[in-house]
Length: 120
Image 1 (spheres, rainbow, N blue to C red):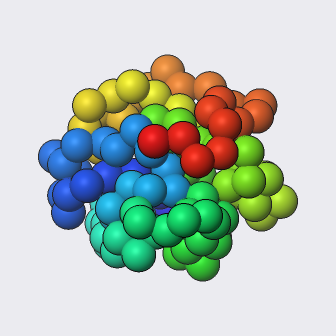
Image 2 (cartoon, rainbow, N blue to C red):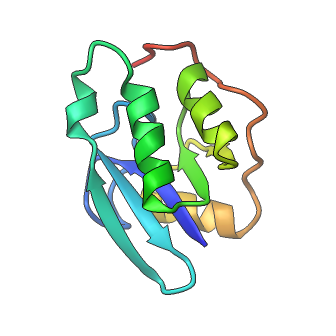
Image 3 (tube, rainbow, N blue to C red):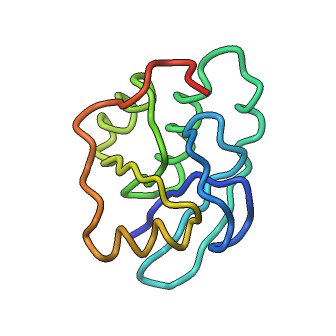
């Protein structure tokens, strides 16, 4: 299974970014292979609108089956839900800490967005 994480860095030790649409990078972790790739999301950081939708579409295209982030807005949540991708929110400080919480079953899927659009 592939899991998408929001981050500002390029490794599992990098900070987990609390923002979904405006996170500078998406780290796509492949649990089966124990590998990851990093997707550049910086074009959405300064977007006037649509950052969450664009980031959600990038997650879908990546093949990720799950998203772990700090917060997710309503438009991005709808795109992810339509694609069957559950959203898990956490206040973990790093990608690796969020991954461990996910693996340990400490995270629950969100039933809806937890912030308004254009949250930063």
